[in-house]
Length: 334
Image 1 (cartoon, helix red, strand yellow):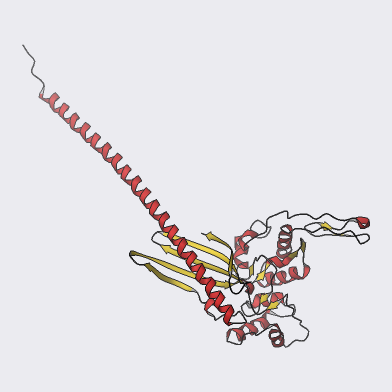
Image 2: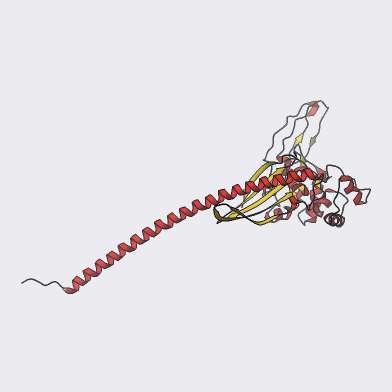
């Protein structure tokens, strides 16, 4: 006698088969979804990189435009002053291309770096300069920063400079006790020079790591100091009152603010003598190493936003050759 199959067992088998099929379908769906997600992520990464490359090219075009503006300003004006086209920021300008529906937003500005105190002035041939240290110390005091900051920055600048050797033609020499350690030889012996012991800083951000210099200190210094490839004087037509009071001994901050208010109202300084005359103080003497009224160093900053990509670039531009301003360095920033 044959045994009849149990209906309940058949139903269980059919139920297991359905469950197995559903599990297989779910697994395949998960795998396919993962593949599509990875593919979509790869496509987005390629699109983002393409947008970043295009944004960089737009920024380079903006940099060329800034060079042209600076060249034309030098041709028309003997002084560098605020209120000219170069000093007008560009904010959220829409940029489109024929055949491309995408819209890029460009923002940028040009800053006169000689309207700031140049930290490069703090040392010469590896030797910190007391007069310049005193100027930076006055600026730090006005900004509420520690008094020990200026000498430490000066030592850092000196460490990045080469120290020339001495000829040894004089008699007995004496050492100079600077942070960089230079001196002449004894009994007329020549002293061998040395190269820099540290790389030269390029921007204010490179000060981080010096004792008493943190992010807050750098942000406080940023509007007032710069680092240029050579020693420079301050442009009285673009410098804030704090910088003028720092580089001109005997000029109070209140007097400097009165001068900058008159200047910004349209009474620009024609030359260094004009600036000196307006001080109305014969006890204050001004030299070319302190004050000028024309600049040749500028910082160009720009940001382009294209789709999901946002690229910011900074470039230091030299106008030593007024007919062809040159880019000294450029870098992308966060």
